[in-house]
Length: 281
View 1: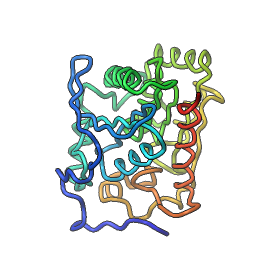
View 2: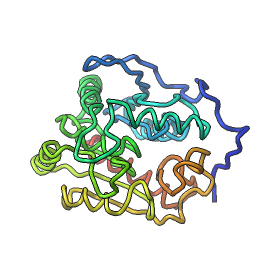
View 3: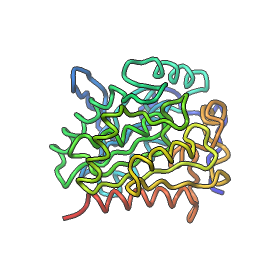
View 4: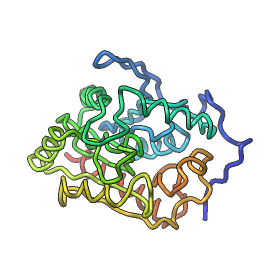
């Protein structure tokens, strides 16, 4: 299989700006907070949110695929060191810091992370700048559910929910307040939306129970797809090997770049879904 093998000496060091070549670095102030957003491409907007522990080279690779499929990618920096495969120690510190941040609701369930307000504002700006029928949103891991929460912004019409891990302490719960859950359900029915979602079988961070909870909320409008665990990259970066410790990141850390591979098929299905929703006349 065409997998990446990682040794400590080959890990991209924090601050390697070359990883983000071709992306414009913008300081974006919205809802009283300023964040760095990396932008590239042309066409309708897609908000690509990083997985824990940040905008790694694998996340950037996904952003390039989305850009090359005919979209303008907006990639907000929400945590971590941009452009790096962090060491296990650094990745653990980043994860702990995010878990206690007021921007996120990492534990408990039944609440919506405050960062969703900022992300919805970013979607409005991106739609104004790029036009088209609407905006796509891709969340992964720590940000997985945010793609769904962003649909409370009318411009967001193509949510991709990849291996959502929050809340961390309740595998059957959703990171949504009851009011937001009801509003999202109404929005999906009113505007004929569908959420595309992926997870690996046996993922301890994104369980079958969590997908069942999404399906209970959205019914057939939740298209949750499961990939057998044996297809995950067996040599992911150190944080995923030693901290995540389970097949998890379908189109980034555990992706296998081999023609016909299930993770490649998942990547291609995501791009096709975005095209079908956003590249229409």
